[in-house]
Image (cartoon, rainbow, N blue to C red):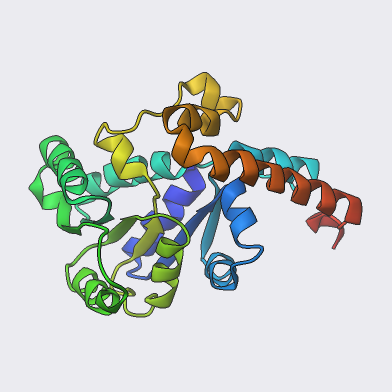
Length: 237
């Protein structure tokens, strides 16, 4: 987390641009068949493990990661960083009432100067170019996109050049819903034990059962398949 924050801050100070992405078990399963998503993830400048399962799998495969960096935790830390350094943020995604609620929360806590702009996540494909231009011309230093995968990753990758005016871009999934109070995060003990997915599942079982139960099973299969292959660790290459 600290390293990621330092990289983002340095990027803004140097007036450069950087594309960030998080991966969890579900996304890793998705990108096995979604070539555009895989290309977007693999060509990002920073990749963090959002899911504890990814951290455990990396250790199991002798490619250990330092820690989990949850997307929502990173976003909250970056918003705080933006406030302290007089940077601006743009929020893109979720329903209109949800993104407005997040704007209201941040404005009350940090002041209106933090917000460069916002837009809900409901649009047609042909609108994407104009949305990217709107964001680029907003004066934002950071962009947070709260849209489902792979739509957000593909949008950020496809319009990466148009968004270079923004120093930092990342997808944050359902984070706006959590910040607005519509969805609850799992207790810390569940997060630390890799059970955050289960907490989400019991809140929305009809919508989440396939994503988590089927997806997690496929992820476990992929991990053991990789282990059996005997792929050497990075230190051995």
